[in-house]
Image (cartoon, rainbow, N blue to C red; front, side, top):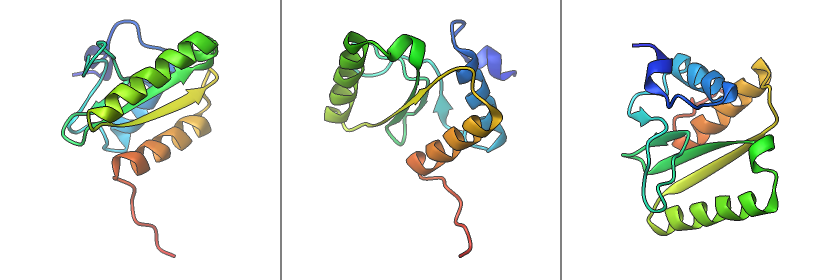
Length: 119
């Protein structure tokens, strides 16, 4: 099954790039994408239901206005009140390969799947 068939038809190129990188990193097991959860029918870009972790990629073009930022914070507050951990990642498209790699590392840490690195 291709990763595109698992995603909502109106996803951004950034979301597709990050999903592909998460898949390569082995982070898509147990993850769902673009599925409504708790209250206000919020649709996280990436979500781990069993871990109650939701990730939103906030493209600057859609999330730069004060009203949208206020709505985004309301969603975070509502989810956190229901026991969810929420990570919002602002970005300016298009994403470079290095930016995608950094986002994946941030998500790994957030989800708790970061690899132990030797010191």
